[in-house]
Image 1: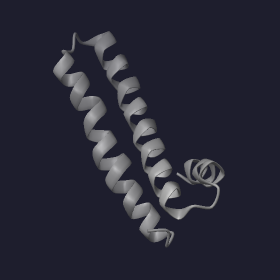
Image 2: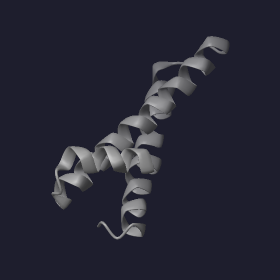
Image 3: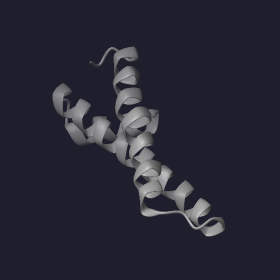
Image 4: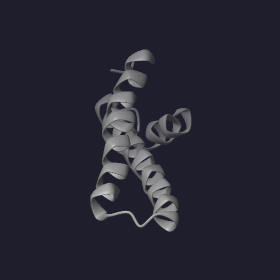
Length: 79
């Protein structure tokens, strides 16, 4: 997450509100892409449905990306 935070600091130009938004959006995107990668591997071996794709992408994005990102920012005293 520290790499995403460094990227967000560079993109926000010191504005704390845009830093939060950029960080959370980037963190959600990264975790959703990781969920997609896992789903592609699982789909290769087992014929998975599109509903499982939505679950594999959505749950990590919300729980790890959004909620984890907010907790990370609160821990770094940026919230």
